[in-house]
Image (cartoon, rainbow, N blue to C red; front, side, top):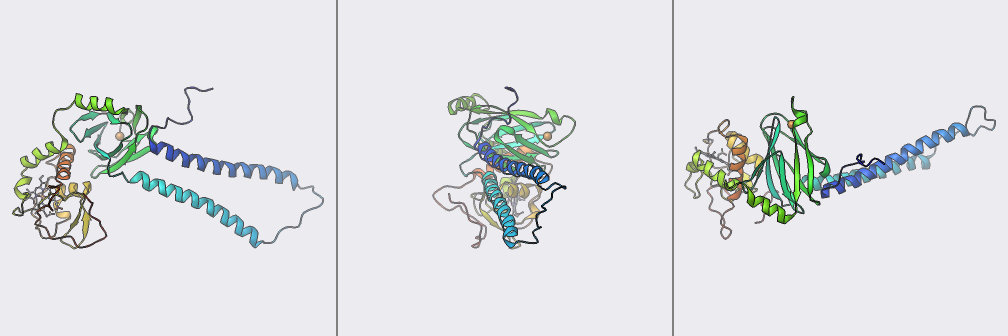
Length: 331
Ligand SMILES: [Cu+2]
C-alpha cells in the first residue's frame, strides 16, 4: 500500500535483528496490555452501569489476587530487563577480532580512517560479514554517530574515545546521520556506510591511499616529536618502554592499576601528570595543542602496534604489575 513508506529501515547488521526482536516483543506486550485495558473499561462500564439492580458485593481484599497482579508484571518486567541487559552488553563489547576504524567528527563532517592508511570523508567502506569496531572522537562539540539500518547510535565526544561495533550482513549503501544537534549545518552532517562483498572491498582498499598504515604515520610522528628520546626500546630511557604496553594493566605510582586502552594512551600524551607510571617521574611534557586528533590517533595506532616480538617477554624497566583482577590479554 505504501511502497515507499516502510515501517522500519532494512536490517543490515546483526545488531538490527537483535534489537528489532526486543522492540517487537516490547511492542506486543505493551500493546496487548493497552488493548486489554480498553476492552475491560468498555465491558465494565456496560456490565456495572449505574441503574443496575443486583449490585455485586465489593471485594475487600484478596491475598491471592494481589500476589498474582504483583508477581505476573514483575516476571514480565524481568524478561524485559534480562533480555535488554544481555543485548546491551553484547552491543557494548566489540569482539576481539574486530577490524578497527578511527572516526573523527567535526562541524560538520565525518572523517574516517582505516588501519592501513585509507582516509575517507562522510563515507565509510566496510566488508560484509566482518566485525568492525569504530573508535570515535570529536574535535569540537558533541556529535552522534547514527546508522538506522544497523539500529546503532553512539555519542561522539570531544576529549575522549567512545566505541561502537557492528557486523554488517548485507551489501548496500546505508545512511549515516549525526544525531546530536551540533550547530547550523547539523542537518547536513550526513554520510553513508558502504557495505561491500569481500572481493569488492579488497579492490577498493588497493585502489586508494598509499600513505602507509596509520601505525607507520604514528611511528614517524613519534620520532619527529622526540617521544623516542625518552621511550626507548630498551631499559635505558627516561620513560617506560612502550613495547607490549597496550591493552595490558599498568601499575601507577599511587598504587592503582589501570588498563592501557585508547583513552589511557590519549591521556598519557595530553595530560601526562594525571596518571604516573610506577617507578617514573612526572617529566613527560604535555602534547596538548601540539598534536591534533588525527595525529593522536596515529600515535595510538603506533603504540598499539608495539606488541613486541612474540617469542620473548618484552624488555621492561617498569615494576611488575601485582596480581589484580585486571587480566592481561593473552597474545
Ligand atoms: Cu554533528
